[in-house]
Amino acid sequence: MRSLIVDDDDMGRLMLASFLEEFGPCDQAENGQQALELIDAAATAASPYNLICLDIIMPIMDGTTTLRGIRERDQQQGKRTKVFMISACSSPQDIEDAFFEGDCDDYVVKPFQREAVTQMLQRHKLI
Ligand SMILES: [Mg+2]
Image 1 (cartoon, rainbow, N blue to C red):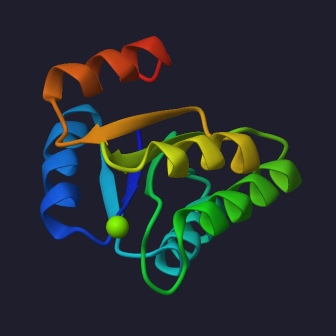
Image 2 (spheres, protein in one colour):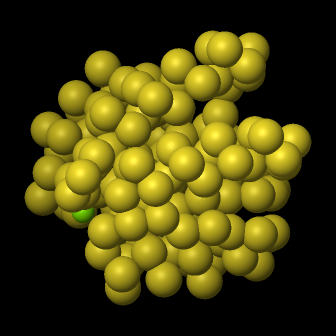
């Protein structure tokens, strides 16, 4: 499984990466603009991401806008990338909006629990 974590919170990003790296290469981006550049580069290199974990509130380009960019690319390429939104427990409304507007597949809640993340990957048949 090739994954990408997009989060402006360094601690959260590194912790999630330590879980996902067990299952394959895992790249990191600090904002949506960086993420879309990596996603385009991965597509060009014919090694697209199987999973993208996406924070909602980020500088430069937020998660909801990034998700729209991902789905536009998916549509052009005739596929659907698994996208999990990243949330702090305090922002359920953001998650709801992301589900409704942007069509994400699931969400992971901070602080991340290894067991919960692993179960989610299994549920989505990513591992
Ligand atoms: Mg953030």
